[in-house]
Length: 442
Ligand code: DOR
Ligand code: ZN
Image (cartoon, rainbow, N blue to C red; front, side):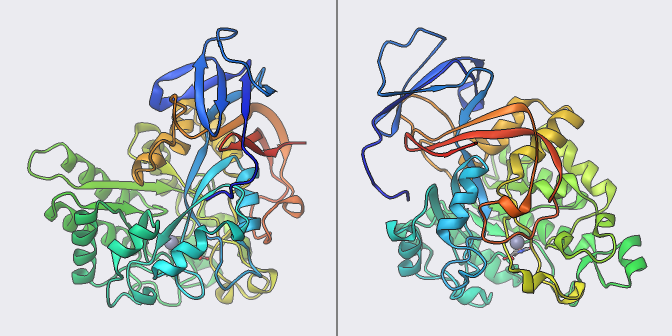
């Protein structure tokens, strides 16, 4: 959580165009924030209350604070890659007011003590941090952690991200326990029995480069199995992390159809990353390790299926899988390089440039994928919408602003991005957490 410094006071965001999909608002609105909450939302110049400060939002989109369901903040233990302070500063610059932190740290976040440590004000977070705790002890996949204790300490979900929960009986037990506690189980869907020593997607590019490739089936098989399991367990909640293949989407659609039948009450949700809706396996080029991540960049038909699913509502959230790594972990042979890229500071720009401008997905849907969608997936109460009384978390952006992303200038401690030098349309102008401006573009 954000540290409680001075009282936030009141802030009037004036003259902007509000997009709040959960509240079904897409219109010019003024927004008044007071004492860390949304005090009032009203058409231009109709607000009654005054404010200590004003923010001129003319020409800008005002949205509920963005929520990222999947980031790697690297603490405890790997502060040479990122810290909670630098990672949340990057989040703020990317318009995210809340981030969910994956537990594949050193040590793994598998106890209540580590969950509490992550949330402590001393970590210096500038946006809200919601811990995701490990689903199994040390994420070894063998014995479940104590979900109830972890949830009480503040974990919003459980996951062994970086690795799958491969054993079917362990996954069934995780979904059962999650169902009892109303806690989502987040699966990194990869059949690692099929992907050993693989470093990219299996296809013509892996063949050309002489690299062992991960098949699309290695992802889809696990999603398929997990959806089957979820459908056998009442009230279970399965969330598929960084979904990247067309076949996995088919399984998710099957899982979602189950929601509407009287018999099956499971909730199946999924997230997609900006790099998977933007790039292809062939972009790896000549062994460029800034295009190496897991799941890998896929084929054109996978990307096409993802674009359709983003537009039609199958995908619940855009999540970055922000995975910072140090230079020495990336500037090595492709097969030895670490999996993962940074993503917090380019997510909105990619969504606007690619999804909105190129593929004509409406801005309202894009905002939903960053706000109401993710808030629902993890039940983040009083967030994801600027309804009166909700937390005063706001993202303000300019959907028309052109700019060039420079990795050297980013807030993240690591610079392992494939988007260095890219020209974007769409820029975050200000990020407000609990009524306080934590980022402002210069
Ligand atoms: O590319 C990835 N990097 N995928 C993961 O699942 C883990 C992540 C990391 O922690 O670096
Ligand atoms: Zn993962």
